[in-house]
Structures are given as C-alpha cells and as structure tokens.
Length: 84
Image 1 (cartoon, helix red, strand yellow):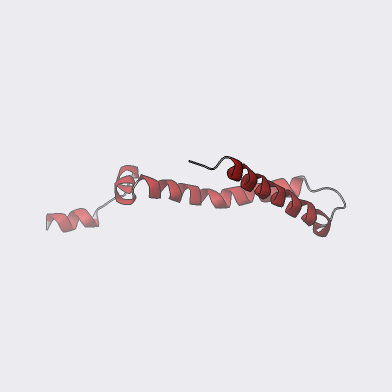
Image 2: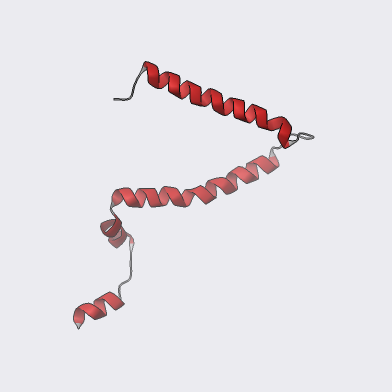
C-alpha cells in the first residue's frame, strides 16, 4: 500500500529527472528546448536587419554560397587534420 501511495504522490524534480533520464539525455533535452528560442531570435533579427528593397530571391544565392563555403572549409580542415 505504501509504495502505491508514493507512486501516486510522485513529484518529479531535477534530481529525479537526472536519475531517470541520465545526464546525456538531459543535455540533449535541454538543447532540443533551445531550438524554438533560436528560431524566434533568428526571425526577429532577420526582420529588423532586412536590407531595404531586397527580395528573398536576391538574397538566397548569397546565403547558399556562404553556407557552401563554410561546409567546404570544415571538410577541408578535417581532411588536413582529422579528429582523433
């Protein structure tokens, strides 16, 4: 009887979540919760710093080219100095 009452009155806290999920899963959960926040911040930044008179079609090629350069830089760096 006592264990059933304890289960019914269980109030999760930070320590029980760490014990239940593990530290790695808790870190992944916290990082996942940051995704909506980062999207909101990005939307606000984009809205406030959008160049006057620019259309998405004008800005998209530059964004894609910048992303491709960053990816190629990471690939090149990992080819020269592989992670150990």
